[in-house]
Length: 107
Image 1: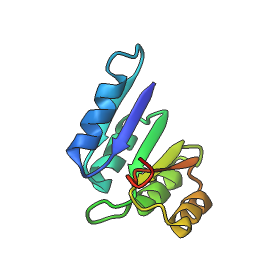
Image 2: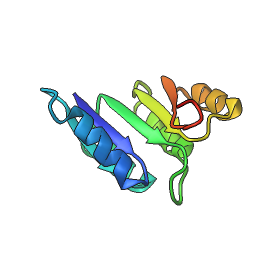
Image 3: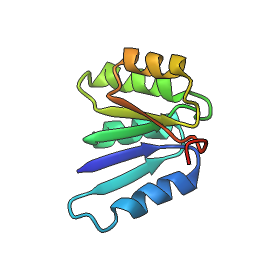
Image 4: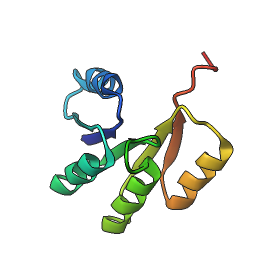
């Protein structure tokens, strides 16, 4: 399974890659911004995209819209430290399949 992680924090990408490193059949690629995330998606569409909302230059929400413009069936999960219900609702309205909070207040 190909997984694309789009996050401007290299440690998040590295952690996701480490999480799946021993899982047979998983290929996890990372991108630090929306432009490289879209380029990675176009180069070899992943089965799942995990996109941070807060990206430099172009937001993760806009990246999700761009991806859906190319592939309406794309499977996208948004993840962010911002767990405001308005952001969650907006993401769901765009068409993402899920929203994961990176908030530490639940730990």
